[in-house]
Amino acid sequence: MGAAHRVVLAHLVGALALAGCTAQGGEKKVMDDDGGPGPLGSIAMAVTEVSDAELKARIVAAEEAVAACMRELGFEYVPAPENYGFTSTEDAEGPEPGSLEFAEEHGYGIARGPGISLAAGPDPNEEIRAGLSPEALEEYERAYLGDPESWGEQPPPVEEQGCSGKGATSVFGEEPDPFDAEVRAELERIEIELVPNDPRVRKLDGTWAACMAEAGYPGLSSPASAEEELFEEFLTSGAGAGAVDADGLTAAAREFLEKEIAQATADWHCRAELGYDAVAHEVRNAFEQEFVDAHRAELDAWAARKADPSGS
Image (cartoon, rainbow, N blue to C red; front, side, top):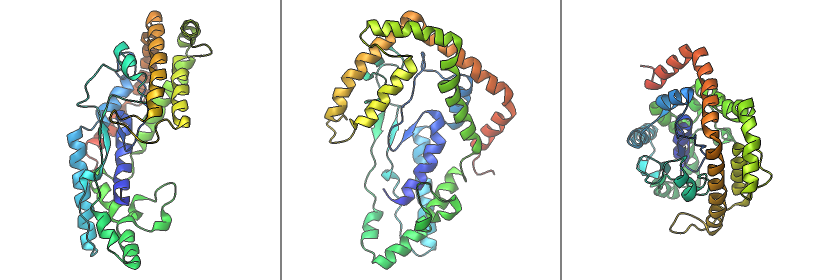
């Protein structure tokens, strides 16, 4: 994938993260008891959610903008919207997330999620780059990427990202809206800090842990930490790396999935027996509503900016 594509994808990831989507890779998504978001989560999804069709249209427009910029500078660039890979859940079939059937088929969705992977195609600009001399290639890269030395672990300011940055921002707007990060941080704080430490939830954790121990999973403290520990195990084990078979899994990931399904299914039964998710959902909704009530004006302004990213 070319650098211009990475720039556009950086914009996409920022725009879609709040909607629970993923682009170029995977990111674990924790499902609620009914699969539905709370008051703040609902607003975030409404503001940031992008359909597959709209996403593809934006990618096409961004690529055409990159090509136009490069032409103005005297370089050839072929728009390559097919060069983007992302995961779609719009047309995915199968059990509903949060259901027993989902746990029995996907576990928590760590090793294998329900989405349809839309694979990236070849980049026609690689052939153009291959035909350039080292000096011409350096000029070409600088034209659409900006100063190579300014790219480190974090990208430089968008205005310094050459034609690639101009193409992306012409469609997706300038730098990410700072309120995106604030909303995301609050949703994470509620999920990771507030809900797990609420007395009603902590009381249930002990009963849940005893239920899981009886099911053959001793030493677990809560549903959230148990899933997170399994997710970390998947990452550190490298089970997702290597040759992928027709089912989209490596041999190691397939073995991991069996373990994941067994634990997730036991987890589902213990939570269902206790009514755990309903309580956690109620607690989460209350915390989210507090944020919504305190930031109504900012949320309305955020929605307006997202509706017209160009500011026109």
